[in-house]
Length: 377
Image (cartoon, rainbow, N blue to C red):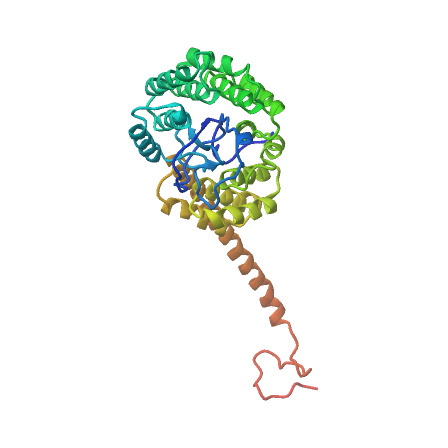
């Protein structure tokens, strides 16, 4: 039976939304796993921000923010909370008297408040102002779907699941497949939090059936599969996702579980070149050197690097110390065996040297005879 010998990187808990924000450069590489996102790229160019470490997915009309429900700081999928607070503060100052033209900025404010961890109350207050603006334009207007998704996600963050289900039910009637996929993914996260993991996975699969390229659901399924040793499903879900150190680290674990240490080593070189102090990758790569390639010395070096690296969960440091202890014992045993083997070879070589004839072919004088005496005829 397969087992995972390195800790689970992340379980699918990332939530996301789309909103217009002021132009912002990429921030810290922080995050969690998969997400529920309704980024309407159909309305824009679908361009993404470039460069390592970018937090924001950017299209011509929207910038998608993502946030981890577990507040895991070891992945590349979330925006820095302090940045979200700054964005919320900036937007609030500009939206003292909002109008219809400020619709997207109001949705952005909802996203920023949620991402800053303000809870469902402040997000709902912005939603009320948004509805006032919408109804001033046309009494028949309903709340924009992306705003409904924000309310659903904020409700999940606050563990107000009945309210979240209310908004998810409304989103399920959307004609936009990506919006419905986001709603299904959010519903799956509720099921997962509630301990109904098979139902959660079924909902994420339903989201993928709507949009095969829907990244949040693929990430959620991939890392859940990896947690339980299903490396084939994990590799299938990660295939085709953007080149990202978070996804690559998941693939390292998948290749290790598939007994492909050489492929895992290549992925290790790739991710550590970009993120040399990324602890989950360091730990997985050290285990690959130790268990897969049998390179004890390199494994110990990489594990010791974890201890020198600040940040990250203490669980990885604790596991690293445990493995270092096992490694040092094995290295001592290996060195003892090598010394014993060398001594045995030396003992075997001594009798052979004593019985060896002189190189000139002459007979060696008997023991005790003068060195220059000739042998008797």
